[in-house]
Length: 262
Image (cartoon, rainbow, N blue to C red):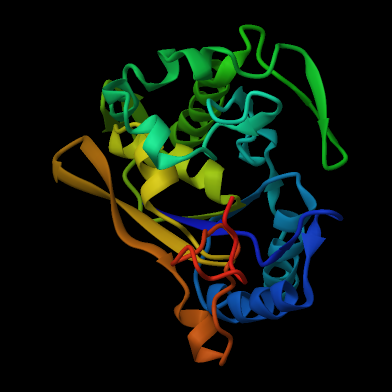
C-alpha cells in the first residue's frame, strides 16, 4: 500500500483558504495527482486543505472522505520563552526544547511539563470549525487520538497495527491520498516511524502542496512496516514554473528581514 500525504497550498490563514499563489500550486498538484490510480482520498475539514483538494477532486470527478483528526495539530502549550501567551506545541525555539533529552524519546516527549499543560479539555473554536478535544486534554491525548484514528483507517485497508509494525490482513498496492497540514503530517510520520514528533516538527519542513510518499514493505509474509521514499516533494511546482512557497519556514539567516523570524 502507498500513502501520499499532501500539505495544503500556500495559505491565507486569516480566511482559512489559499492565496493566489496557493491556487496556482493546487492546479499544478491536480495535474500531478490526476495521473494516479487513487483508491481513496481523505481531507482535513479546514478550508485551506479542502480548497487544495478541490481541484484534484474536480479534475478526477471524485470525492474525499472528510476526517476531523486530519485537521492541523494545533494544541496549545506554555512556551518557555513566551509566558504571556500560548503557542502551538511544535513552535518553540530549538535552544529551549533541545535542552531536554526526553523530547527526543517517543515514550517521554509528551510527558514533559510544557506538553502536559496543553489546552484544557473541552471544545475550542478554530478557523470556523468546532473541535471536541479528548477528555484527558493535553498534547499527549491529542496525539493518541490522531494516531488511533489513523491506525483504524489503515486497518480498514488491510494493515493492522501490532506493537511497532503492522500485521498484513489484506496485502494490496492501493494508493491513499491525505490532504492535510504540516504539523499533522509530522504526527502521522512519527507514528509510522516510531520516533518522537519533535524530531520531525523541528528538523523537517514540507512546503505547501508538497507530496510525501510512504509505502509498505512486507519483507516477511504477513509483517509490514512503512517506509518514506520521498519527503516534501515539490517537483510538480518546478515543472510548472512555480517556486515553492516559504510558508512554514523561518529565516535562513537572521539578518534577512524579509523572512519570518518568530
